[in-house]
Image 1 (cartoon, rainbow, N blue to C red):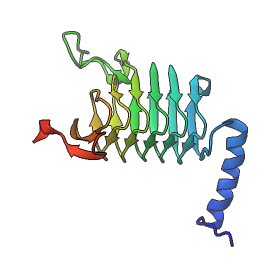
Image 2 (image 1 turned 180 degrees about the horizontal axis):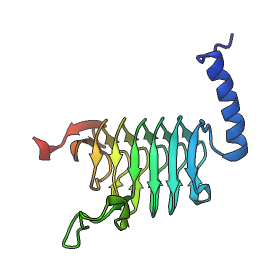
Image 3 (image 1 turned 90 degrees about the vertical axis):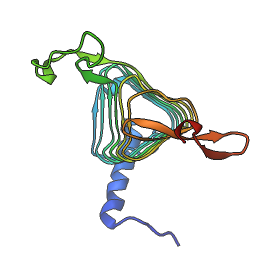
Length: 194
């Protein structure tokens, strides 16, 4: 006998979301509403794209999403230039991925703090997230970051720089704590952090 794991209200909400997905997000697996999307025409998504509730996708540039990507509840992606997410990536709830900044905060041309942040120059650098990446709850991934295939980003981390494939990252700012050994098929402590 078939058993639903959802309440009656959630069951009917899911039926409505399935119809919505089939009409407006062809090829996606399941898009939960409400979802806030700016410039959907600038989004390219692969097969079986799935979202949680209350996602926000602000796309002034390009957002490229691979096959089998899952986006958790309250996740937000800001793509002013380009954000690319590889196949099989799992993004938990309350994740922020943003390729923009209001102002410049490094080097000799730093933004003037007398100018309100919202009036400062918008600066953008592409973000690339590889295949089969797992991004934990409440993570922030900032402009210019590239994460290699198979990375795991621990909950509450802030990723401010790029990392190679098969790394486990934690912290604010994020740093490598483990690397995957393809020969032993084990995660091993990163020797640089001992």
